[in-house]
Image 1: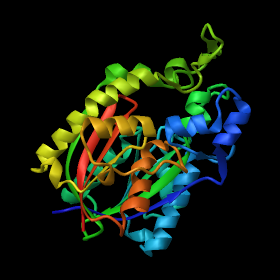
Image 2: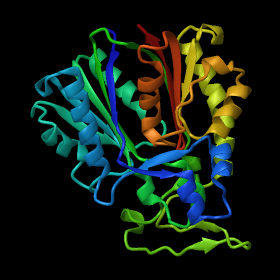
Image 3: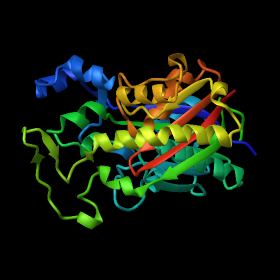
Length: 333
């Protein structure tokens, strides 16, 4: 049995933070400097009272309305987030009720970041091929901006908030899911982390730490990213991942029509593109107006840059926090 992505929808919060606004807050960083370095001009920010679960609900309802798929026909809900509404219950259970999905529907959260959409597709395909489910609703949603310290201008320029919804079934759709390759290296966990707030450090309070020049470094209550370590991990892991995905799908690089990677930032993407020697016309970018939306970057780019526009074999790959990575081939129908 085969599995297909039948539809993709997404939701972006109303509030927008552009580079000029960041430059006003941090005058030492001009707006054009930010865009040149990151490839990002603006990003959407969740409202103070808007949770990742709220955004996932909006994306899910949008997909059901756009496709006219009956909520009663969904028999499994997968929800990827690192911004859960509660420690418990699982947000997927709450979303089952809010989306009016049947009580016979399985539902679970899984906590992954930039590789999350790939893992979600792998889980969706497994559910369908095994006969456990016929229609899977895969939701991704993140509010990373709520983890960012106001003084942290570096992460502030990169991350935006968003949610996506994808319908995966055995019925022929725009994208047939090929074979997957997944990987994990937990030794890199310290390099992208929000240390305080969960059970291990539930009551600990962080303090702002600055370097000798007065630049903000970190606060353990907020998102910390070791950019140099993440870049090094990516530059080593992604080329190998691409080769592994090609091998398990019995393809060579020239048979790939388009490459769509997690939209981390323009500098990193350009480095990877050149390292694996992909022509610019085969490489997909979609981050200028939304930034790095973590697990949402790939489905949003698929929706905007590929659906009804680009046909053939598309290699998609996600990588980041964890460390975690994954890739697969989409056969565009």
